[in-house]
Image 1 (cartoon, rainbow over the protein chains, first blue to last red):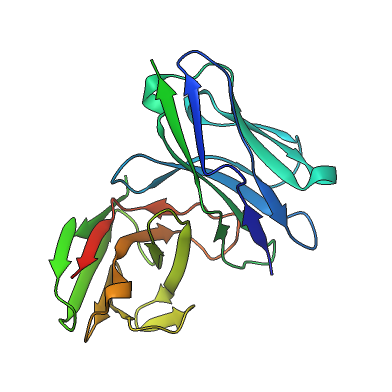
Image 2: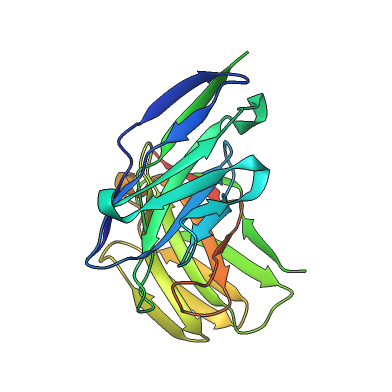
Length: 113
Length: 114
């Protein structure tokens, strides 16, 4: 069975600073990987996903993520954070054989003015 | 375009009372439907999923049940709520069952059991 770990429960960055949110997964092969964002009291919105090919994936809202097989990681990055990026971010992994996604516990991002 | 609705948005219920949460999808047919629960400070736990009318798969044994009376309607129910049922309930849909199929989430229902 697959699993996902988001080591950072809460991260605070200043507006305009760069951001990296960590995600590590456990799976027997290369899984499908996702990052979602959840604004307070809202549902989840897909930011980006990795299935195969180029290991650097571009998403919406200026986010990108890099798949590193050797580190079993799929970290989310943004070069310059905006106050509107304050939210909770979830990494998810799904097996390649049509199984269900497993979500991490999330990282809450606070943006300081 | 497709939209997904959930209601109510918030609900406060006493322990032992029944529950009915509704999710509907518009703009697509034969979607796959999902119910998730998000406990405070935790990720999403898949509760149920459905690939068609009357077809429900339960992922976690618990106090809840799900039904799909119509193609684009998914209902989460309980006969007697427990304190541990409190949480944020999210409905989602996808076009297929492949892992590559994007899931689209509804706005959620905040349930507080007192």
